[in-house]
Length: 407
Image (cartoon, rainbow, N blue to C red):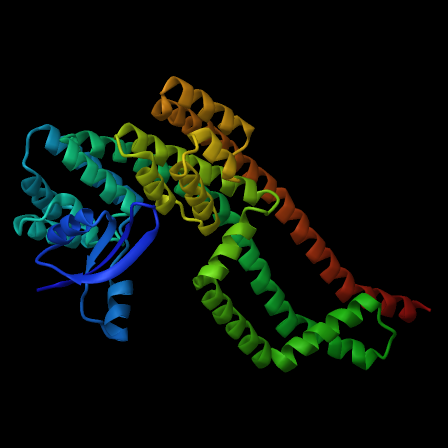
């Protein structure tokens, strides 16, 4: 009998986890529900793979992209709407998927469907491909009989999310390339250019400007101690990555990002956009607000924002209205609070959340364009200042030598 690891929430909303044996994940899910535990995640326990096996799996297979997922959900909607059985639809998409990784996952899902599992639980076995939001929505669609509508909602959500991510990456690609080029240029100048001029100035035995002395000392220090600098950089990088993987470090880093002058505002608006999109889908699907906020929190890729949303969920569990709970959450401004208050009074929460998502979509588009327009002149000024300082430090002594020669 297989062993499963599970996570869920009890009647009080407290997160519980454990390990249990059962005939299938469906059986365990039904057993947990009888114990008043709402299952969030159920995964079959497998044998631990070796380091090299995990490395091969991680780098030998390409990650399933947002475009792949949105194409999958759109095709599922079309096939199910046409009356194609779920298993046949999944098998057809597995055979024709453009992503090899997604094809393998869909074949596994089809096998689970053939073994009697529901689509939601079959997809739940692949958390690296299907998020908890997708799994939760699919399970709701199966229970309500509106699975094709769920896939249509997911398609719109995934397409919008994918386009936002691509625009954000496009906005930071150019500055990242320029900064890397500057860094490489500084290293080359310090290793090959400055030492040559330093030898010339030493033979000339002339007084050097302070800027030139500082540049030569920095170059000498870099050439002399580069192994220690490299070791320090590697150790610092590894230590920082390890710290950011801890819950405390990840929370501190995610909170710090939202406090950055320009980028922080953009990141916060992207979080609010995803919150509004996800919450709108949840509200339109008939999922209870408390359970839906758990799915919303899990869809947010920021530990600090997740904590604030869970605080909002906790406030609703204690009898507060959505507006009162939103005031507890530090993410919302007066505009969102006002719109949520109107939505609660009119009972049109899903429609109002879609309006909020549309508002933030425009704001994010504007911020991304403004960020690109702002970064280019800032980088140009930074490069100009660096080149000017280098030129002054290198050529001022030469000008002094020319003056001395004419005297």
